Amino acid sequence: MTKINVYIDFEAISQPFSKHANLIENFPFAYTLGIFRGKKIKTKSYVFNFEKDDVDNVFPIIKKQIIKDIRNLLTNKRFQINEKTTKFIGWAPHLEVKILSNVFRDIEVDKLNKNHDLSLERLTPEIKGEYFKNLQQMVKKNLKSNFIEKRISGASGALAALAGYLLYSKVDSGVEKYTFEFSARELIKEIKRYSRDDVTRMMFLKQNMNLYHKREQKALEIITKKQKIIRSIIKRKKLLSELKKLSPDKTIGEIKEETQKNINKLTTEKEKIDDKLDNLDK
Image (cartoon, rainbow, N blue to C red; front, side, top):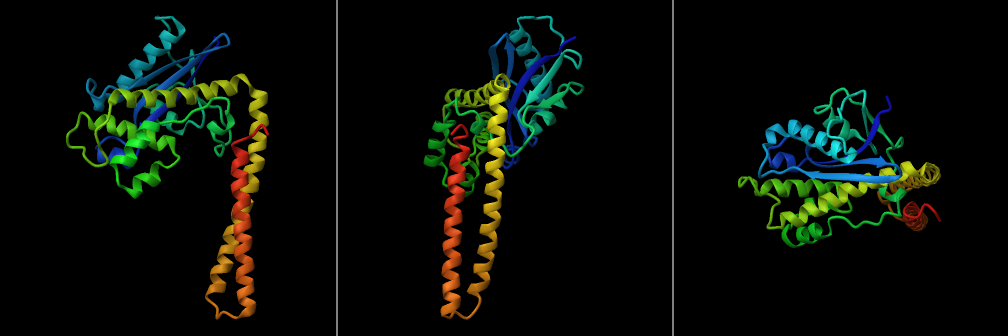
């Protein structure tokens, strides 16, 4: 029997938010499933209903919902989900493996990405997305926390974790840290869009494996070069630090100036490499 491939992406409430909410670490509060119907991509997204459902029963609830959603995607209400019929596929599915081991223990979880350094967003520039825009604006307005700002800066996964934490705070009056007034309906829309796009990106790459491998190879070459530059920057910064400890004279001063110029030059080159990673087809 040919297995059904189910592409999956979970969102979870991770540390430090899970600790403040007194939830299990990496509490799974949202997911998107995707399957191919012919060449068409079909997806189904879900967000845990904290007002209705018991957080202590999250895994049975998730299991029941995944079964329902897979059957709906297949338009087959009798489809049996087990290790003989179904395989889950994630991008770099550390989180998915951990969660699904508590839900479908015998079902295989495969990974599409064989190299963990690669960004799914960078490999799929065709799918444009600016995620959690409203949430970011609310955070800037309501949370005066350097820790949170650093935590979520440019990190959609961390924003998703915060989003789940905020949804939970609606039903637990004891959760007060890092909270503010917000529209649950709008936040759920942002969560679903982010999760859905990750699954759509995976499935796009699966449909275009030649393009994927081409971009993957180019990205790995760029990353290798970037790592080499970073090592050079660290080496020169260490040298500069040692030179600053010495009694300055003209020769040392010249060396310090030259070293700093090299650091600046390498830093600029590293930033250009980051730009190349965002434009793998050029």
